[in-house]
Image (cartoon, rainbow, N blue to C red; front, side):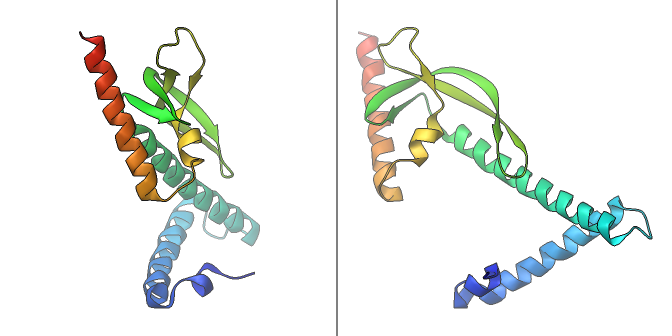
Length: 153
């Protein structure tokens, strides 16, 4: 099995190794503060894994939260315009633990009491380059503004 250092691009491999060394030192400090002096290898191993999982969980939660925070009042899901329906909290499962995220649900425009969807499941599954997705996102925002203007007449 290849290690991450081995598959890193040549021009960034050295920077990657330096960052990884700093992360290892930080993790070791957290583990040393967590386990008692003279702890067994098994206890230290469990602490290292627990700390690594918690760091990963926090990073994943932060990433999901920033995605949720970036969504606006209206968006397209598979070519259909949806408008923000209700804010709420949700717990999502990951490989390291549950992730708690504040996010909105969206309901199809013109459909009363219809099903709601959380936006990123559909957003992440869309094909195309990031620029193509950004263009579709911009189109969704323009349509949302137009729908809002038409509704105010």
